[in-house]
Image (tube, rainbow, N blue to C red):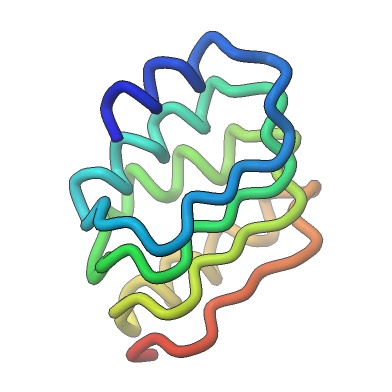
Length: 108
């Protein structure tokens, strides 16, 4: 995830990124979120089934608040909890580009 995140920080051509069914876990997901904060091309991110159970609310908040291109975010089939949902609900009004959010099959 670290190498991929480094690429995302400088790549401005990838628009659809499907990272489903890997084993990034919480730490890998946080690294990717930090890269999304500065990425200006990824419009669709699919990170289903990646063994993600919790994520730092501050990292999630900064990534979603500052990213101005992400339109579709699929994070289904992980182990996300109610804290994730509460954090995400607080930042959705600030992000004006996200149009599709899929969080099915989590522990919400």
